[in-house]
Image (cartoon, rainbow, N blue to C red; front, top):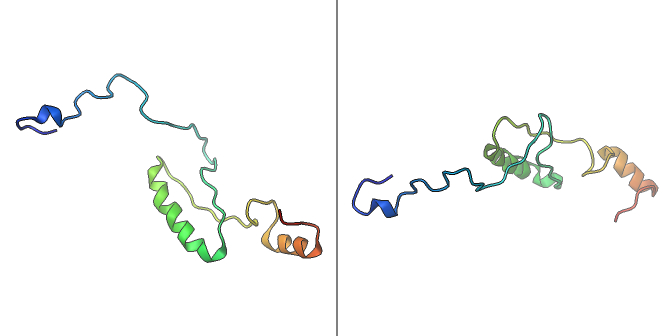
Length: 92
């Protein structure tokens, strides 16, 4: 707030004060995944730092977890490579 001549034009005053929606929100449960990222191993430290900086934009506490799975698949890294070499899995 300003207290000088012409301040009424610079002040926000009662703007958005009557319960009108001005943003978006989501209901999340405890333990629910908020963000999933897939990246190459070379970019791991950059992804972790980006998520670390981004978690301050969310209310509450967040954890950063690294999955042992390959991408968004249900296979572990070693298992995925073996299945690809055996020809059981094929790339899209």
